[in-house]
Length: 180
Image 1 (cartoon, one colour):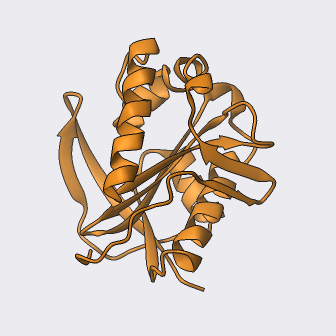
Image 2 (spheres, rainbow, N blue to C red; image 1 turned 45 degrees about the horizontal axis):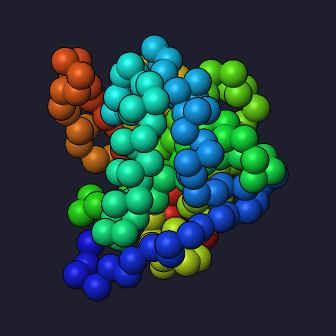
Image 3 (cartoon, one colour; image 1 turned 180 degrees about the vertical axis):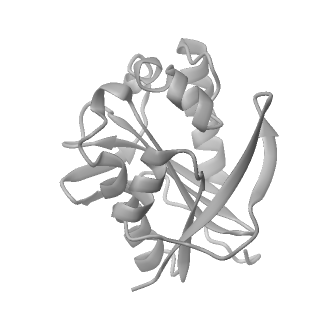
């Protein structure tokens, strides 16, 4: 990551693949626990658990702070700009431009994550000028491996990322998608 990283726009909306990826707002706070307070999300992601109204408020405030710093974008995944169905993240880090996602349990099986990843990757390539975007995920997370594959990513031949979070050890593979 260079020292000349530009900041992200204060307001964002990305459209494509039948989705509208938009800023989280105060109006979304009530919907966030339904999306994120789930055992799968608690297990596979760094999102806090339990995820309640207080966690929703903290996440919205953190989202705004990280965007202002120019490091991370968190957008609600929607089909029409209305009700959030999940979240897509883009994070600038020394190891690369990373995308992450979480889809609420009631909205899975519709291809939302793969479509949102493709839209966010296109933004990274076209607007940020990055050469590669990455996903970091556990091999045992079959749903995320499926998303990576459907979105056109390939497993990279790089060392695993080992760590521990929420008292659980993890081992992350790195998947990459290069600029078309």
